Image (cartoon, chains in turn brown, cyan):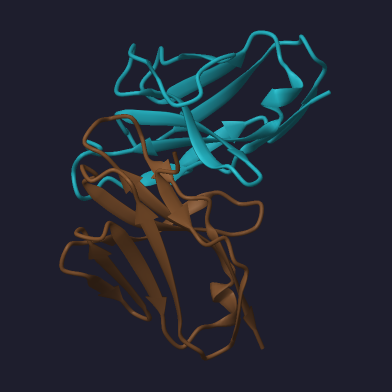
Length: 110
Length: 116
């Protein structure tokens, strides 16, 4: 059973374009949602939390749809430095860590 | 502020050997976690701890043991390494209750382990 599903990509996108990823989760009781970014051979780092009303951080916009159980990440005016793997992360109500998607690989091309 | 550190960074073991991975954090976090990351599998939780002296099993605990004798340290042990344990191991810590909104986990740089 796949708890958190993402399109692995890669997404090849020209610099300056807008790109969007979706992620679906199976546990309707999930309480917290995040996007993490992981550069090649590095540790994951929090990109942004995802709030029920949707939230924006600069060029990044995250949305949550509880009814359809998916979250999305939109990147506007993409930069070469946005090239990375983006991990969809979901937490239930307990203390037992996070459930990670396998990640979506994004390549921004000059 | 070093954040989360892990030692060693790389290690090669032979089947049946034992080793301990050390994770240290200087952020006074209560919660600490060990994950493994394999190609095509994503990160999977091995064990976690909600405070000094406590540990609990995660998704893939078999073949591993952990200890949290000090708040700042979380040790992961492999008693008899197997090739299936070849992976990248990440430690993480968090500063608030995991069910809270602001419960960011901070990750260490990882340990790359190969078991021959």
